[in-house]
Image 1 (cartoon, helix red, strand yellow):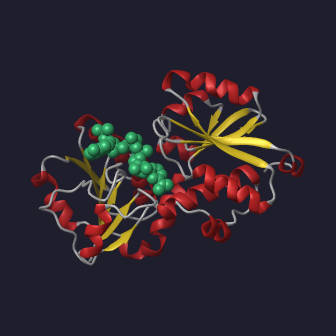
Image 2 (cartoon, protein in one colour):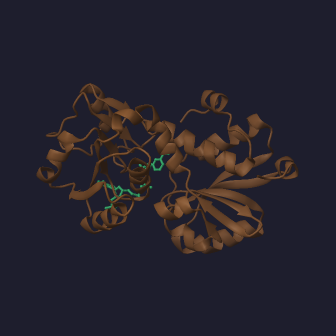
Image 3 (cartoon, protein in one colour):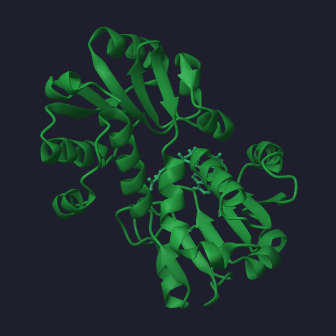
Amino acid sequence: MPSAKLLRRPAALGIIGYPLDRTASPAIHNTAFRIRGIPWTYAAFRVAPDDLQSALEGFAASGVIGFNVTYPYKESIAKYLNQVTQRAQEIGAVNTVWQSRSGWVGDNTDLHGFAAGLRPLKRRLSGESAIIFGAGGAARTAAFALIRDFNISALLIVARRPKRAHDFVQWASHLDPLVAVDSASLGSLDTWRPAWKAARLIVNATPVGMSGAKESLLPAAVRFQPDQIAYDLIYGRATRFLTRARRAGAQFIPGDTMLWQQAARSFEIWTGKTFPLKRALAEVKL
Ligand code: NAP
């Protein structure tokens, strides 16, 4: 919890990533700081991989008090931090960092964001199976939440790189030995079609769909069913993944709630104040 004095002093925060082409975080946090009367500013820092360590040293030297982490550093940032919360260690991804007396501390607020998007459907998911497309940091966060908090019975990871999918399964199998975790190759539809038909929840944790509504992750041969739930982690746009789910009568969840809720939790960590969700939602257009 920051001191009242710190909340009255100008300070800098930001988000680091690369290439960091598009981020809503500066708009969200600057709006929230203004609404709460906190004189802090939040910027986007495009940091190339070779410069990550020096960027952190620069942050420490210039009084940056906290930052978010996005692609491609959510996994690699941990080795530069002084402490990582148990939750972030278990997930293997950090998206929120703050300066404590003992140095940089990293946590994962994406977990809270992902779970917030699904919470109203918790009962419908209990004992059911899920599919996650993608095997990166967001997929790990989703798998962790589904296995630990949503009581799913089975999880299939569908990814394009077998090695990454295999490593993912190794990791996820340890989260709860009672949950059956397996992987399939995105390009071999026959290997995952049966699981698709049986799944209650289907998550897109790839960036496919970010470039426009025509970009499609799924082959035309698979169709959503009305009893399914489609969760696309991409925010701020109607992706083809979600459009197909909606047209099939399935329930669909865009990544906007995840974005806002992870931001809200980061804000609360840095400031100790409640995030002004209603007002920020009204002011920020994603
Ligand atoms: P990541 O670590 O780079 O993982 C992306 C995954 O998608 C990898 O498995 C990657 O496969 C796969 N992928 C990339 N391009 C693909 C393609 N053309 N076809 C099939 N698979 C592809 O990224 P991330 O951090 O997990 O983020 C994934 C998505 O979640 C992004 O769209 C991001 O914006 C979204 N996200 C949203 C929120 C939110 O708050 N709403 C928070 C976090 C992330 P390879 O390993 O083969 O490259």
